[in-house]
Length: 265
Image 1 (cartoon, rainbow, N blue to C red):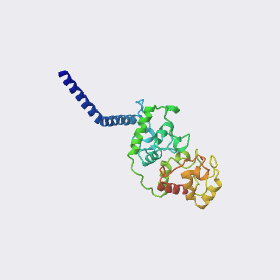
Image 2: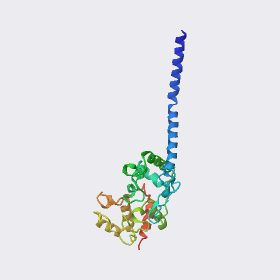
Image 3: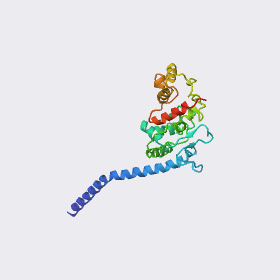
């Protein structure tokens, strides 16, 4: 009888334990996930840092600044500005493509600009870079955490100065140069006075481009910058990447075009 009673007590206790474990499983999982996230972000900061004494450090901070707030690229002060990773631009692009940061870190700035000579190199070991999957995942998690806390974009003044800032922050300098002198992309120093037709690959709609520029340079530039391939090359890539509103807002576009139209040599 005592054995039977003991057995009932043991089974009851076991049942209570299983029920308790089941009821609290979600909380434990959340805590474990939080601990994992915290550890990954901490490792991401190590990878991001510019610390020659730590073999896990990739030195991202050399270009993007200690806290990821941007700055000039070393040894290339006139042509490249590493973007602020806390701004709304990264957050906007993540809304378009949830893998945006992972793709850029893994395969380099060519993902954004189409420029194979982009100052932002590819970091994944898959393409000859120095970072492991774990390192890339950690630094991507860090950048995405910054983007998640980014303040909403505010309207940009429609001025030449503001447009020049957009030209830099939107990555235009990586193809067209900091002074619009050209590079992988054409020289834009006189685009406010005449249409630039010296393109690496002339689009099929070049005649229409000339007509549109003559009729309304501002409207033409917006069509070209937003989606040159669809608007002027029958859907075939032109080498000029598209810039949807998620990447360049309407107010940024207005200021950018104001800046470009001010370039008359």
